[in-house]
Amino acid sequence: MTERVALRGYDTTLDRAGLSLGAGGFAGGVVASILVAIGGPPSPLGILLGFIVGVVITAMAAVAVAGPMWLVAHAMHRRGPGTAALIGAVCGFALFLGGQTYGFGLFAMPAVDARTLMFRWISAAATSVILAGLSAAIGLVMWRVAYRRIY
Image (cartoon, rainbow, N blue to C red; front, side, top):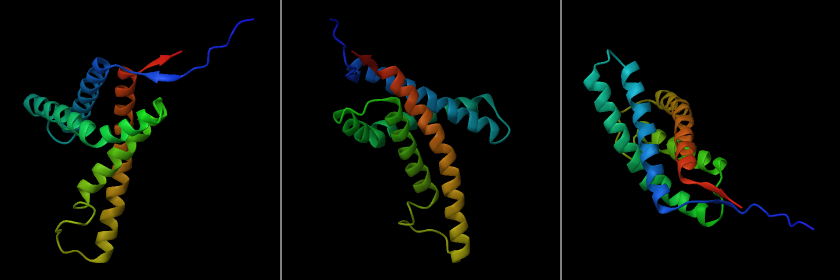
């Protein structure tokens, strides 16, 4: 009689986690340089600077914001691609929404009427949903580099 081996999930090593951070930073740099290129008359220096800033900011956000969430998910054995995409999307949405709404309205903002404020929030949420999709894709790239299935 053959025994069936149950899948136990995914596992990573410290070196793959570091490579994953580099891959996520690189993916963020590519997204940033594309946004710089379509945002105005592109110059090679501007695109390169956008790439470098994108790499640094993405890596910092992955460590500072998504890192604690991923540590909890990892400890709970929620290590699959769906979890990686969800954490990326949630973190990306929150960061971009907070950045466009003056820290969710906690910091001083220009005086506006209620209708303008409502449209500002709607616009910020719509933009953040799009960028959350890109953040989810970056989370998937990082997950793919870091994790391997264990049997």
